[in-house]
Length: 280
Image 1 (cartoon, helix red, strand yellow):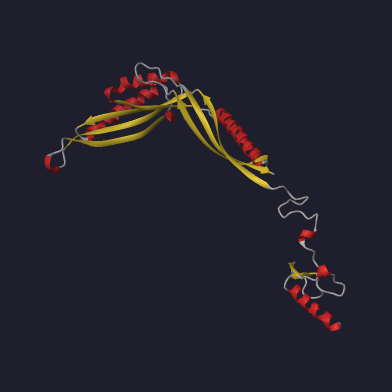
Image 2 (cartoon, rainbow, N blue to C red; image 1 turned 45 degrees about the vertical axis):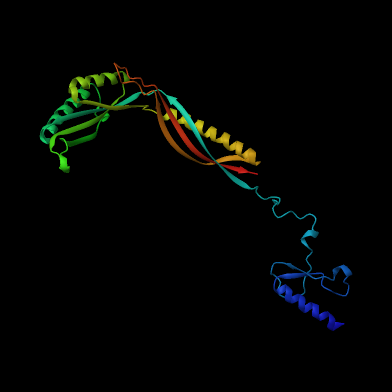
């Protein structure tokens, strides 16, 4: 009998060394239901000695499923990312008019001389009209030749003259003066005047920005709440906000006829991407 018991011990120790334990090893008191041998993987902490019997996982009635959260653990965390738009409108209190001067002459020397005289007259008039120096900006200066008719055979046509031009951006903070400035510029430089466009703006946009930002975040929170509710989550705090700001004029005004220029309204738009925390 002593020789028959030594064989299971040696076999058991070898199995424990490679990380397995035996369930129901045969012994003197073994019942009929414990004669089968099942290898169950266990942590490799034992390297010698008798094997310990590990009951099957299914035998523990109170053991939680692998996916459940154990007591004391933090609930699963998620992120909800949404894009939203906020808007605010205000009335422009400033207008920038692009006023150009263009001259034509047979030679470059003549065209540039005439352009210099006309543009100096224009700047002098604008200064006398109360436009401060920081509201005057030269944005474009050009000079190029003009050609005669193209000749048969692909020969290069002759230069018949030159055109030169300059553009000055004039910012008028007094909207009532804007149309008066254009009229006065036409009287000063005559047919050389070129009005190339105008744009409206609001000098102090802080209040509008604050309103648009609050509107954007409110819309983002509303959308994120809808997504979280649909997923069965609880919406948490804001993690991050990315912003893009744009300004869009409405009713820029009619420069045709006898004026006045109508500023209309100015819409400030804030586009945000907001990331929220959420928990199950």
